[in-house]
Length: 378
Image 1: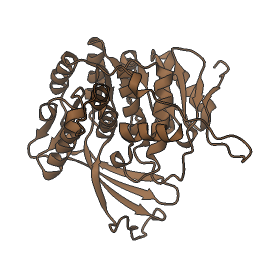
Image 2: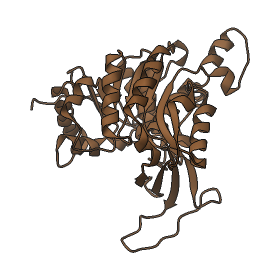
Image 3: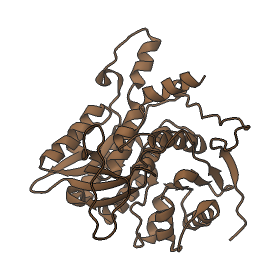
Image 4: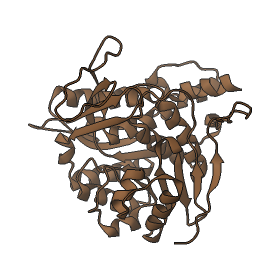
């Protein structure tokens, strides 16, 4: 393995008081060209959150902590859904900016959000399935939701139980796949063709659906000329080796990267750099390995490996879904023809914002919030 050169593209908050604070990236929302869409193939769940001071030992019973008067929180989730909703949150308000320029003042989500993205997946014929579909429709950014996110009869919707340790924000998750296991290859092919016809230029998928369906999605999207992004999560060792030729960007976290590449562990920038080379040798053009509080490592088109540090914006409350926040943001910016490294830096900052609040999708900042934050800092 050749020597890894690491260059720092952004900095964390200074640990010494005499050093100046970091400059957060300015996202030029007004100059983006958002005319294309993102097609997301993935899972949709209802998440049950339990917050606790410590994780229980085997055989131990603990009481969950209360949050806003409740000790149980139910919310929409799933890797595919989280990524899709983050993409939608950056889309919301696009038309408002255009109307502002023409001195118009429509403010509702429906009036300011173009329907440009497609979500492909399945939900059950239960109340949770109806809630999940309503969540996509409410976002205002998705085309023909019930047509592409299909209801499967006599099947339960996906469900996740998420434990969050309050002192660190770390989490443990148990997933029941439910209807997510019912996504078929024919469904994917049909919806992908329609997504392409609607102008989707970026395809994103993960592994909370059947592996062979995710692989087919990458193959078909590549044939259709889309930029393909693969989030191989949860990590698994049985990913077919021929899939990498269909992947433009792969984005695992450090645990997933270790599982896929056969490493005993990935800790820090140098280990991540070694893993990045494994993917590059197999034909992937861009490798992004997320490292939690350490940010991420990027190798783009065989160039120097770069380390993009995380932003320390305050007390970490809940890290659940931060990686999905990153990927949803990344896919949105790439659909706007943003350069990869700029898209990574901006997505990294947005993900750093998400860990300051509880939950997954509820913790993700909106386009409006990000713009207001930038104005405040100027």
